[in-house]
Image 1 (cartoon, rainbow, N blue to C red):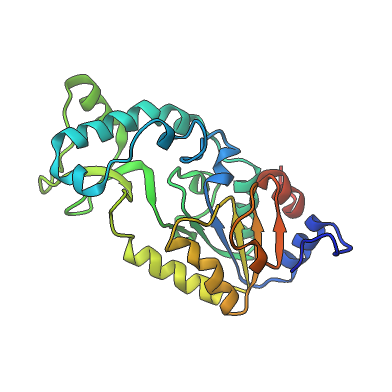
Image 2 (image 1 turned 45 degrees about the horizontal axis):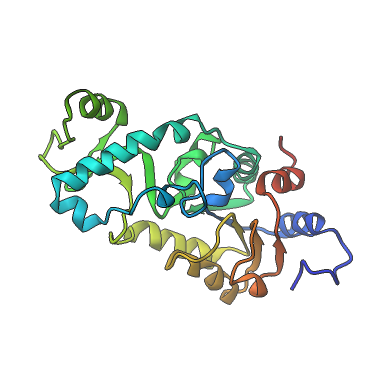
Length: 256
């Protein structure tokens, strides 16, 4: 394993060399990259799951009361998300995509910060959806949040699809909801084709998504993990840095 005390080079220099020699890099990002933008980790102190019990998908679908509570929570916690800006970690990944080094960013995050950092939508694979807009669960029509917010907070109106009368929900994957097949297939294909797989800010405890690093290793890719805390896959990685993502990547890639 690279990244232990017996290596003579600085760990950041090792990361620089791995990125420099790679032809096809895939990033796998979790909450840790966005906490540096001020968005709390769901599971950490102050995160949403320390304040609320999760609403399961079946309950959302079957209960108007649960749908109302879900939208109330959404708008109560939205201010933090809306104030957040892409940080140096997001910008570094955008630069690697721009340079043609990084073919995909697989993300567990729903904050849309990769898009706002300049990464083309086609390069982003959102495993858990996106909380910056809503969709009809029947026909898939997209809805922007501001009109929904005005109607909900002003008149208590729950959103219903104008096209098919279906239930409208934020475009995220809820507890108990099936993972998106197309996104999972894309993620698997990119993982199997890469020669460097970079885990950035994920504790690697949420499956099946946490299985992608091991798939990459089995296919012969180098594996890098940059995360504040240890993960169960550290021992399998070629390089492990327990460090802040933004300062680390900005130094390696050369962005502010």
